[in-house]
Length: 152
Image (tube, rainbow, N blue to C red; front, side, top):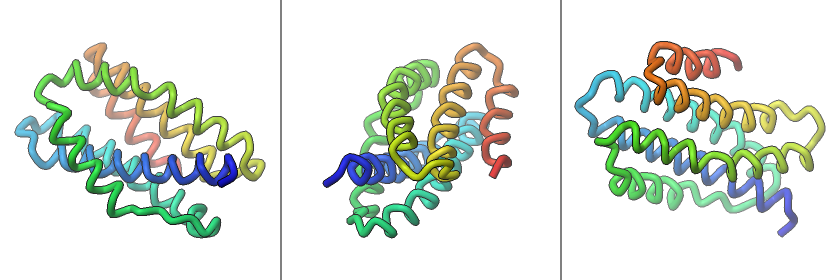
């Protein structure tokens, strides 16, 4: 498998995992504000996955979306989202390696590919959201997610 295909497939599966995880977490939280944020994160991940799916299909890759969805739901069960600040801090610490891979995928992909540009932008938006949320700037944090969703 060439580097592009591997990075693309991993990015797609990661987005499916993220969408399932955030959705499952939103389904079980009793905190309305947290649910709203988790649902926004789920929508971002799902939209990014849907866009990547077209590239995955065009490349003829086996996406295994069902397995990635199961993995996301299992991950949600083990995350323990009751400690929101700890979850956000863990999320932020997990993002840099993904961002680096997304930037590499964008660099070796088709020049000016909007899907890959959005992949990078969405990861930055999630990081900025988590940063603002940890700072207690809740309205601004949600605005970041909503602005990203409205951008494309």
